[in-house]
Amino acid sequence: MSSSEENVRLTVGEAELTVDPLHGCRISSLRIGGTELLRQGDRYGCFPMVPWCGRTGHGRFRNGGVLHELPLNSPPHAIHGTGRDTSWTSAYTAADVAEGRAAFYYDLAAPWPYEGRVTQTFELTGDSLTLGLAVETYGDSFPAQAGWHPWFRRNLGGEDARLAFEPAWQEERGADHLPTGKRIDPVPGPWDDCFGMPDGVDVKLTWPEQFELSVKSRSEWVVVYDEQDEAVCVEPQSGPPNGLNTAPRLVTPIDPLELGAVWSWTRL
Image (cartoon, rainbow, N blue to C red; front, side, top):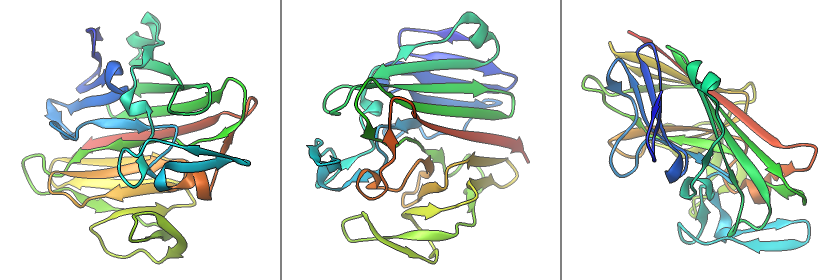
């Protein structure tokens, strides 16, 4: 492991993971044998979506009878939480690092209206990366979501990546990009859509004759975004877009929100 003011790097076998805690605790790079799997440049790496995922309609949500308004960072909605815009603090030991692990946290603050803590963990092996997110409250209960937004490179220098998954349903997307509340049979892509996988997220990306990578999570929700040429996004998350309003999951003092995901890969 090596680190600088901005980056923390874990290396296990031919796998090399770089995390930037000062810029949203984003995975800025994942290299396997020198091959970068994540898009670089403007929209890059993989960032945590917390304390909400995707779009929250018009930046508004309720907690009981209290209405809250969030900044409209993707007008007319609020998108992807505040964690990606926050500096995180390291919480790992030398023993953790020696085994390919690291952890970081930040304390929830305005514009999020509730106090609490978010922790993100990473565990790297030679052929997998295990991710964890936990949202805790310091007092009042509140609805929250958690997830990850990776930008996997569509092309590694050979054929474009192929996407394979078998969702049980697709959330119908309205003209405002929010789910309508209706579940439909999955339709062909390209997508910027949320899918239900009640047995757990299981999505495979294959770069022919190069790599096969799977994204798995015990959560039943995944957003797939492949409407651009450079990247494919496979986003496991704890609830659907606008879920603070339509499927609120309360974080309480005795029941934090916890989410895990595993990326695993093999060479072809």
